[in-house]
Image (cartoon, rainbow over all chains, first blue to last red; front, side, top):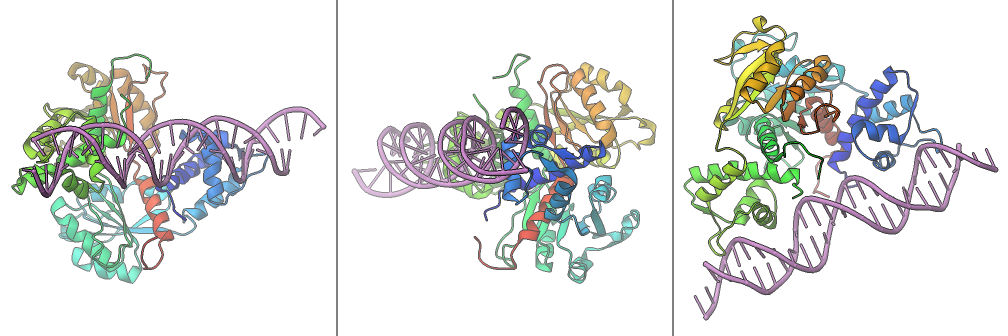
Length: 216
Length: 216
DNA sequence: TAGATTGTTAATCGATTAACAATC
DNA sequence: TAGATTGTTAATCGATTAACAATC
């Protein structure tokens, strides 16, 4: 099955929306509600669920509780999602204390840095030397890592992670990282978060923006 | 002209790649080189440039210096790109010191917080109270802002920014912000950076990953 | 000139949407 | 039953790619 990458993002969005609707006391939703909520057509909502083998009632829409449960299971939320952070600078340590992580069941189990003693311990997350990262990954079967080291160290850390068996990487270094499929096999997914790129994008778009008239 | 949003991201990527190629001493590039470098087909490279009225030589490819200059101009890099940050917590202050910004000509000119005295001054970026943000935006014609306040304050800050005239917003709060086009007109572009969503996405994809065989 | 690369047109591909039969 | 919503098929839309004429 050729899995489109956008559909997964939408699944997460449905789930988050549903949790809020549930908190408001709703018990069922229609594809229309979900479409409005995340900004897609109702047809796409139904199609997404259909692709995931999630069924509703021909007349009564979808049961919120069941839907949330099914989405959570699909997204692997039925077990703790552990990850590590390489690079305990400002961004790395900020992420360690990121509140959203705990509410979403994401758990940072360790941080790594070339100067672990210089990092003031964050909550109860242990900070180790980068040298120990590979061993830690293997021992604890870590599958996801965040890279927040300086650009010039990023490629190196990437290779360390992949060789140690990490399968998913979120990269904050401003150089785009790719899997050189020479290492290991190409069984590692890398997601680049490039803040500078996002800003450049914004600056471009506002430049194009006409003063204030109707659209198109 | 209906401007696809992905093309702009590619323009930034071309530009960054070109700067590195230039540093290596190259003087001309072919659509093939650029395609390989950012992972698209050479046809798309030529199409992008064509859409932007950038011309090459039928035989000699593109002159790197001229190309960089043209891309920079398109991306508005010929003038300083100023922005503000609302929310001077860990992520906000981390971004203020983000090295990539200075190398890319992005300049954080002020930070705002509900407790500016609690923020230790970052380099030479002034920190003011959130109450002063609207006035600052207007006085200095600020067009781009980053939101790094807690989720429960995000919608509020968004509205303040839009009303004061900000046209582009990069939002790090974990609730997705949209332009309620009731305020003002809908002339504000919002880009959401949702780290939790990215991680959920990663966790999903690695779950689907088969042990280790050829692709497809 | 011959060879190579651009610029562009037509073909392809995939994702989204419209529409409707099935059915609760 | 009548009405409303799902699940799915066919139509649309847009972006990417293949291919090739133009041309340096």
